[in-house]
Each structure stands twice: as structure tokens, then as C-alpha cells.
Amino acid sequence: LSLVRLTPETVESYMNAKIREGLSAYSVRNQHSVLQAALGQAERWGLVQRNVACLVKPPRIMRERCIHSVLTRLADCSG
Image (tube, rainbow, N blue to C red; front, side, top):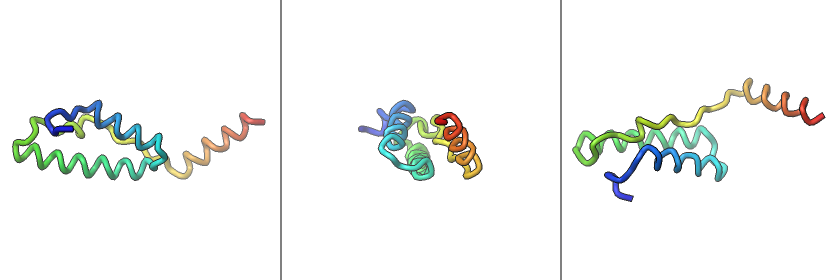
């Protein structure tokens, strides 16, 4: 895929695929940060018109307390 053809939808689709493959939100956030930095440099060099990674929100990282709350609610629902 050419840099000029990269779209926010492409970046979001990639991140969603990585989450579905089992990568943690933390790892996908790191990949998003690297891509955002690389595209930022490409933008400064005039290789792309805009940094499309800036237009995509990375996945949220659930805090331990939040995870515990979700697991507790799931356990309550299952009986």
C-alpha cells in the first residue's frame, strides 16, 4: 500500500484486525504511536499531505479495576 493511498479507514481496519488476532490494546496503541510518528515525519518531508494516523483514535486500555468490574458483572449474569 502506497503512503499516499493510506486512509484513516485503512489504519482503523488494521488496528481492529490486530485486536481480533489477540494483540493487546496496549500493543496496538504502541503500533499506532509508531505509525503516527513515522507519518508525521513523512508529512514534514512532503511525502504525504496529512498524517492519517492522527485522525484515528487508538484502542483504550482497560484499567485493572475496570476489568475486575466487567468480570464481576459477567459472573453475576451467568448465574
